[in-house]
Length: 270
Ligand SMILES: C[S@@+](CC[C@H](N)C(=O)[O-])C[C@H]1O[C@@H](n2cnc3c(N)ncnc32)[C@H](O)[C@@H]1O
Image (cartoon, rainbow, N blue to C red; front, side):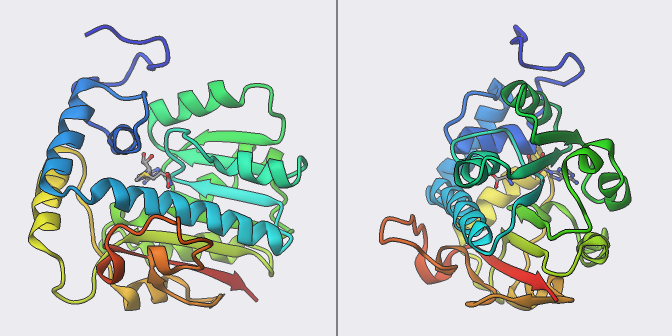
């Protein structure tokens, strides 16, 4: 297979990646045949999946706009993905050109594409790192250069923590970031999940394909997400289905109504 010039030399084009499959679902162009094959199979199993993904992106936009309204001008976007329409720096710097963003992702394509897009934007940093290594992220030169951790920062974890298993303790990971944040900082988070045994057959089928071919996922319910906000005060309406978090217009995509397969919330550190 020909390697496009945006693809770093050390990646395996035959192995689907979380970031590139997500890019396929979003209709992006930074993916390979192996990624597209999984994206198509999962979409065939669960046709509502694209709407699910669009809802997480819509939550990201609403959260960033809310945070800008609260005066936040520093963003740490963890698991930021391959840049697509409505990236955090675009929304934030449109509101205030002084706003600063650090994007963090473990995926080499996401990082390479972010770097090429952001070349020349002096207020945005890109870091390739595993977000579970919170000390490394928080003490990285990129964070040091672009963010002042003694001032409020918004940490974003959008459609991310279902890739961190219970064994890997996402509560401790979030806590690691929280403890370093200044008072008045925020956490905005969304992840896949259901209440109880409500996961429908099409979702089970899509996850079976995804978990074996791309990466294992861990679903979480409302109570588990609420625990991720220990040490934060939840902003209204609390932990809710993704489309129900402060919808801005009737056009906000709502893939699956009340049974939407994921939760979102935003909290403030006192
Ligand atoms: C589903 S995508 C979401 C991207 C973006 N947050 C959004 O909402 O569009 C998840 C992203 O998290 C990244 N990711 C997953 N686990 C990670 C980890 N442990 N450290 C850093 N990035 C991770 C993947 O590479 C992928 O780009």
